[in-house]
Length: 419
Ligand code: TTP
Ligand code: MG
Ligand code: MG
Image 1 (spheres, helix red, strand yellow):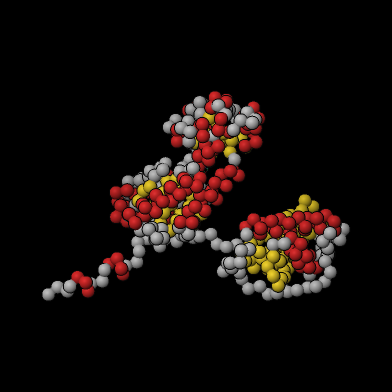
Image 2 (image 1 turned 180 degrees about the vertical axis):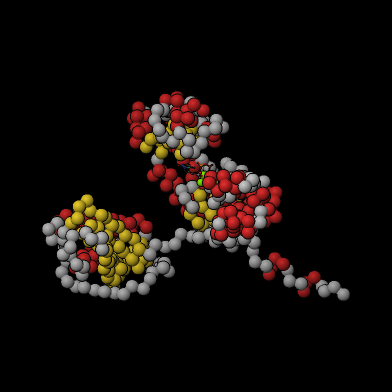
């Protein structure tokens, strides 16, 4: 007799959730950020590159007082008027239809699409939007790995709703939330691991969501050229072609021992695993900094006594920078340290641990000055550094990275007393 169904454990209740890793990449990132300030260029071929932002002051000063969004399209510089050796960082999708794209020389691009509008790069602005879209993601799905200015991996596996519709629901939510917060679009691939997710995010660009399941390997991945594997560069691609291997499927059929013979033990074995869509790398969230430091190498070697004023000023400036970094990142620290490099390239460090964590520049300066007292200052110095460690979040939460510090205290007078 068959056992009643109710005594059989339900599969969904006992099995671990399916591993679902997303790769998210912003669409035409630099260009899309530029279109936020110049929405009148929407839908037009636009390329970014060539010059720094300050070089388009001419455009802006000619239209001083006019909102950026109202500068007439006809006023923007065109690719055909460009002369120089600059390259394109990226192009809008409208420009890509002309065969224009990243890393292409601007002069060559001008031949392909002379009417394209040329805008200078503004890294500061792109970094700002990069921080914004990543903050949106971690609000929704906290396990995120930063892979550069416009892309991240996200572990959907344990996120509420992350399994629904094989990850499509969560991908749509993230896409919409990023668009609502920034006005920018992105494409997302969801797969059992990073390797496949990275390929999947490209499948439906722009504004695409693509899911690759383990069973899709043969249909979706094997027809692709080997170069689509993140880790197969132009050199490896050439070598594979020389062996008659063009697609990932062809790579998958090769004997792993043969691959090892041709490509070496580690790369050969990895190629085999990659072709079979296997990748166990975890999504690594950004670790808390252990310390924050600033250092500077002098233009000429300095002596603690003979160059006291100059050295003192540099020292104070380093402390100010470290204090500013701490505040910007939201940390306070208990261990204050210095690093010295002598004219013979020998380096030493000294530190001391305070009763209370601080981000206060005077406190840091005083403690660092005491550390300096414990160093040999008879030799000339090449480099000076200031470091604050044993960090805690300024808001009171404690990162779990602080390592054991041995408190050392030296109450001798300050070498460079605060003014
Ligand atoms: P990508 O993500 O490679 O490209 P993209 O975001 O512009 O377009 P896509 O929709 O295809 O993802 O790179 C992100 C940004 O990095 C890009 O906007 C500009 C910059 N970049 C360069 O400066 N030089 C380059 O060669 C590439 C590829 C990118
Ligand atoms: Mg991109
Ligand atoms: Mg990218």
